[in-house]
Amino acid sequence: MDPQALIAAARRGDVQAFNQLILTYQGMAYNLAYRILGDGEAAADVTQEAFLKAFQNLRGYRGGSFRAWLLRIVTNACYDYLRSRQRRPSDSLEALLEESPDHSLLMREEGESPDDYVLRAELSDVIQAGIATLPPDQRTVLVLSDILGFSYQEIAEIASLNLGTVKSRLSRARERLRTFLLEHEELLPAPYRLGSEQGRVGVPPPAGGGTRR
Amino acid sequence: MKAQRAQHLSAERLSAYLDGQVTPEERRQVESHLRTCPQCAWELESLRHTVSLLRQVRQVAVPRPLTLREIDVRPARTPQRVWLLPYLQGATALVSLLLVVLVAGDLLLGLGRAPQARPLAQPVPAVAPAPLAGTLPAERAAGEATAEVALAKVPAAPGPPATEEAPVAAALPAEEGGPKAAEGGEAAPSGEAVPGGEAEVTASPSPVMRALGEPTMPVVPGPPGDMGGIGGPAALPTEREPVSALAGETPTPTPTAPPSPTPTPPPATAVAMAPEVATATPEAAPLVAVATPSPAPLPAPAEEAAAAVPAPGVPWVRLAEMGLLGAALVLGGLTLLLRGR
Image (cartoon, rainbow over all chains, first blue to last red; front, side, top):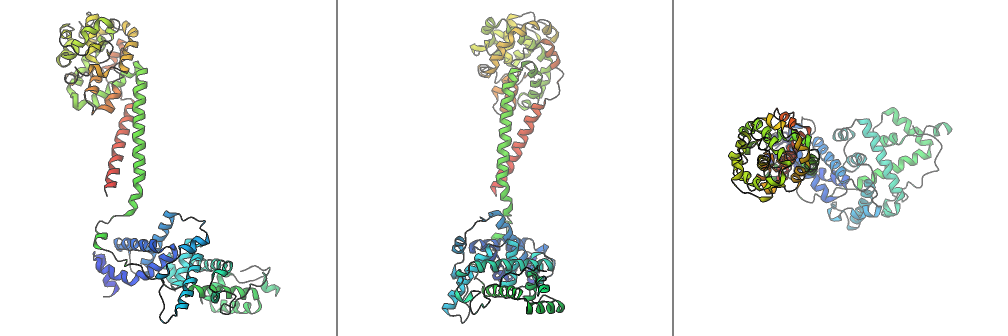
């Protein structure tokens, strides 16, 4: 059944039609929520609540990208949740690392060796800890772009931003995350370090006196 | 080199460059700058590395199906409403507390300012106990009230002797005796029933007062009209005041209660009866209770009695009390409704 037909049926109150749409998007939506919230259980709850809200407000969907519309609802639900919880801002890195994922959640890639899987799991933990240090609006843009692979245009739609804001917010998020990774390089598995052969970036040259434009 | 340093590439431009989100012109500028500026080159590389790490973070599996069940959808419950509950509960508690404080304050202070309390008391019985006492009596009472009030004051001085007869009057008269006493002023009613013996002290409740009044000042009761009352009692009340005031404070309701319950409602004279109504019917408690003390000290001068007949404006305290009661009921109802969900 094509998505527009499912949407139309869901609008008439057909929950099963809506569930088919959910099955298409739940992975994406859950991963977005999971990266923004850093908590698997909360992410599942928030995502499901967002789906319910979406179902009840289907009339608010006026064409365009259904995926973007749905993910916008999920994003806003995440913000609401964060606001209501007022996450302790002073979360220590240890706490963040401890809290982070269940590796069982992480999906193993086809053909990935167990060693690689473990390394990637460690990397994911550190990255997640770094994301958690960003303000929520930067997390969203960073996750959408660099983990979920959305285009600027789609990000703008999901986050209700203009392209310029997407660009600048994304660059700030990346800068901050880079700083975090440099400061906690020892936490990264060796192959992923900036100074490693793979990373081959090395130490930053002494800062020049110029201004950035 | 100097010139180039002064124009390091912004992180935003480098970031956009990484994503291919620059115009061809911008791209040329960036690339030519990078060739000569190691710092910007490093910036770009470190950003590129960061992004590549992010890209290796892969998806996590959905822990459980996030589909909706019919049952989730039907109640259409919005979780947001729940946050209202604590506020509603708080507001209900606050309003109730205010009501209690106001009523208590009115009760206590009302006793203190006997004279003013009088006019205050009048409207209340008419409004609150209306269903119990019936509106008719209340109106009829208006006329008689004055007479009775006058009587009530009279007893003040004679206190002791009155006591013996007072109770008598209180019991039976309540129903018919009340009006009669006012009109006829005959001692007859007084001799009938024998309620609580302590009536003396409790002078406040109307029947008792009436009874008291009759024996002591036979002259006064005689004239049914207020005029008679005004002339005679006017002087006495003042001395009497302390007594009645005290009476009103503590014993008032209890002693009179036995006789009054039944009889009171019918005659229910706006002013004098108020106390009995309060004691007799618990439902009316909050509102009527407030009224109770005021009539007790009524001993106010006769002019007041006359003044009372044309109902004075509803005092703000009453309004506030009723407003608060209404608010408390509405809030409480809402709270219950919400909690039920």
